[in-house]
Image (cartoon, rainbow, N blue to C red; front, side, top):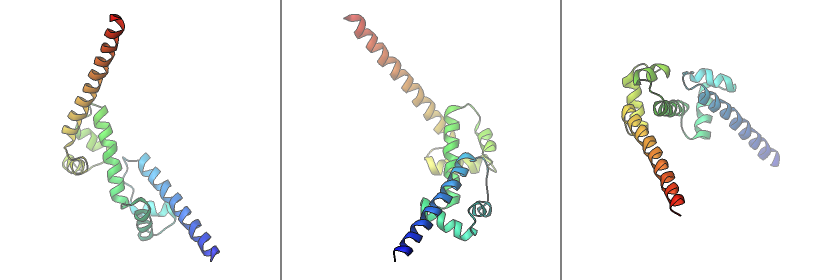
Length: 144
């Protein structure tokens, strides 16, 4: 019985390592759209088995995971660049700005342009707050 248990642990560990490699690949190549067949092949599994194992370990299907990571990358890109929504759509390989915007809004609850405005105002607000805090500290130092 302990042999079965050890084999099961080995299998689980092997599955987790393979899925971790795929997650890293997706995270580092979020502008690419690899097929399930390609990803499954990297693990040495059938697409059906890959999908089942990935979902079991990660908690969401591989397609949803890849879309979410791509949109999270887009959110970072929007917050820290002045690239147009159309440029971001093209960089990430979406078929249209409409498809990109719909997916973005589904995940973040706001359109990409509203998200960018909120991030920019948040960054400005944080900068103003830091400035006000440092000025306040300076005034206390000088008044003593």
